[in-house]
Amino acid sequence: MLGRALTGILFFLLCANVFAQTSGGDINEFKTIAGTLTITKTDHAGVDSATFNVNLNGHEFDQLYGAHYLYYEDDKNPGGASRVLIEDFVGGFSDTPLVLLYDFRGKTPNVSHVSDQLDVDDVRWTSNAVFLSANGKWYRFYKGRLLQGSFPKGLVHESR
Amino acid sequence: MVYQRDDDDFYSELWIQFVDAVGKPIINLATRIVTASDESHFTTDDTGLLPPVRTRRKDEDLHVFIVRLGGGEKKIATLKNQPGVHQHILRSPKIHIDIPVRKHDGQQDNDPRKPVKLEPGEIQHNRDFHGHPIVNVGIECPNNENLWLGPNSKYRDYVIAAGKKSGFQPQAVASIINIEAAKKQVTVTKATTVRGKSRNITRTISTGEWDADSSNPRSTARGMTQFLAATWLGEAARSGTFINQKTVENGWVKKTGAGGYAVVPEHKNNILDLRMNAEAAIMAAVDYGMSNFRSLEAIGYQFDKLNDGERAKILYLAHHLGSGDANRYLAGTIAEDDTYSAATPHRPRRLIARGAKPLLTAQVGPDAAAKRAEENGGDYVKAHRLWLSNLIDAGVNFKDFSCDPTRLDDVRPLLEIVAVAGGKNHDF
Figure (tube, rainbow over the protein chains, first blue to last red):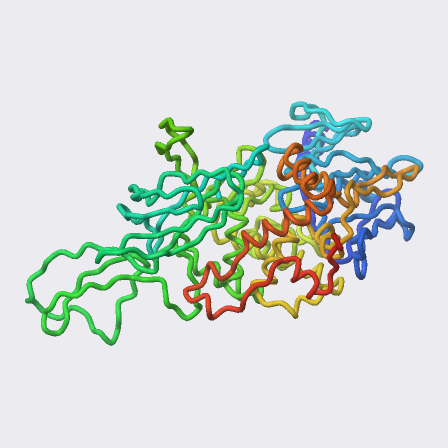
């Protein structure tokens, strides 16, 4: 019994180590617990129009304005990601990207503005917060607020 | 250029450096610098520098003369006066070497039909068929590519490879890398006269050599082309980039089911450290720039009407502003203030376009931005447009990276290029 439990913990740790981040192409589609999220490049970006449309189950969910974006998903649930952190490279080369959090856990999935001043290089998740690493420091996004903090303790998993 | 200051009164301080054909300082060169209000005789120091030339008059050009070895002098440059502290490097097409006296004996030691390949500035002493001493000196120019890199000639292969990948002439690539690149710097102290009193001025000046190990203390940018960590990781995960190719080869990213790439966590720092690799930094800068350039091209701008020197300016415009704001610059629709999308119940309002006022303020500071706006009738849009066009016209010149500039097309000013490519200029 104990052996099986240890095996289970070890399996969890190994799975949790599959940190990932993925750059989007012209069309990117992945599963979330609220349905299929599709990020599609617009045909011809006019002035002030979005460069990517983000749809959830075919309905408009968000828009991105940069030439590139990057996303981090939280740990893999059987039904897909429950949260996704998006970096929208909307400014010039030396500007840090706009960081957004998509949270699919509520009745109505929502978008939160996290920061436009962090050069994020790592993301960790707990059940109620997102931890972001930038320039050697850790930041915690919790209940809509971003605070500088320390490396998260307790049950932490990396992005997949 | 060292740095710029926008003081209330006009003030210009110019540091002139003389270098030879391979970028080494020319020492003990006698010069005469003439302005409308002054004339000075200076000799270059062991870094090739003259004491700074300072003036408080906007309309003063600086005329630079050098003393010839055989007597007399020669005018070699007229430099425009600009506000702030600046550096200007004057490059000689010649190289100075000391040749020891050697006897005319011995055997021929190389085949003249198979010349020895030497790096620029490298010197090799040989003998001809009759045993006469000859000196072989490596020079950069002329060459098949008509490419001059001077102190950065060690990056020649990378610049040429980046040119081939992007379809840009290598001189255009070099002009883009040069404005983006961090440069190695040295600190110099010079005696100068201020209001009749002698005092020392200490400045940090650029050697012109691109710094592959650069680490910006004011930001998270690293490496020769100053990539942020997030942008670099994004380029590693973006299919088709040089960084993606290298990280795939090393097993540092892996393909995902969605067709993208994901960073392997234990190799994240390997990927970020790659920013300090000169080849990766150059290739990544061009990949990133081309991506923005193609975004603008897809909108319908006619960049095929431009030469590569002009396309390089557009590429840097997109690099500086991002493709969205570069599109607005070309279309002439940058507003004074930031533009936001409307908020919805589940989505906060979003910054979708930056305004001229915050853009200019971020670059030159609030006081200088306000002053520039005031000089343009209180118009921040005009002030920003002119500031950025001047920056790009002064900083992106592909002819500066050619052995023979006459073999390259002339480059028009940015605002003229905007109109040719199908953009719109304001009626200021």
